[in-house]
Length: 408
Image 1 (tube, rainbow, N blue to C red):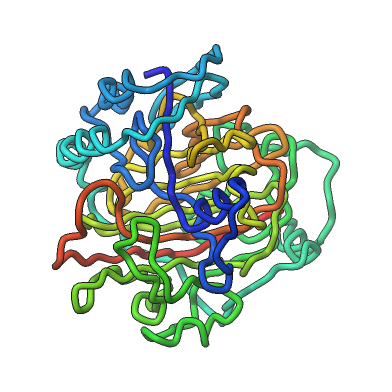
Image 2 (image 1 turned 180 degrees about the vertical axis):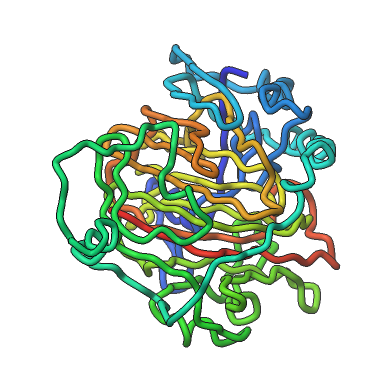
């Protein structure tokens, strides 16, 4: 497949679309920006399933070749692709089209095949053996303190280039939460936030225990099926932020969290360690979303998949908003080499001239032609799937976030 199509409809996108059309947008106090939603292999649309149809992730693009052929291609040249944990730099084509349901369904059928072929360690949640001590709730790390921790307490900077190459992510060398500045690809990232979820919070008390972490509440999610209800979804136990995605009285309940509130980032780096139950009806995406909710400024999505499925990255090309669509890169979708049923670390590195996506320390993809230039906020969004029918009435599952670290 040499083109990528995406039609993403989120609350923020709707607000952005109304603004671009010169219409009045709903009050943001009532409808907050939701960021992006899941995509399919050929039709980069809201909420489609993230799977490939063979055990070789190199065949990912063929899973939706038929749907890809229906796309209206925006002819730019020069796609360079690969799969799994192999690096790719994408300067290829992108397209937009409203048809994504067929691709979504074909990938859903392929999902079971991929899951059955994954090895047992990948399909089983690994034990969280991190040592936990103290209360680090809502920890914001000053640059000097982070540098001191990284340098063994000296706080001294070094003139020696210790930059980690693009193919590796130094923050994923351990299951422990990274603390301190990180140097990669010739840039030192200054840690601004780290959260290890050591302080328990019962269901219904999350916002009181973690007051600096913003949430959405009281309105519908992207598909319109889920209701944002943090008090019924979010809790913290055993060192994990837990999203309990389920229905009550026929209403699917979901949640979205902004870890460092609405802090604006102009470039940034985010790592999360997480796992998810394989659960029909729900999905998860971590993202950078525009601080001013103007979707035309772009967005960055990683990791993104239906719960328990194989994630893949995407970044919207700024300035490409048209008829409710954005163009996304990489043009040929790349996938992680495992699903999300066990703990994994996903890192997004948004630099000035490139966006890099890492999975367990290995580079999955790099894009250079879909790099935002305006302020964005970090968002962790769990919601109902899109374009795949109704959420099963009895479906329920958990998304667990072990830790999150953010750098500027």
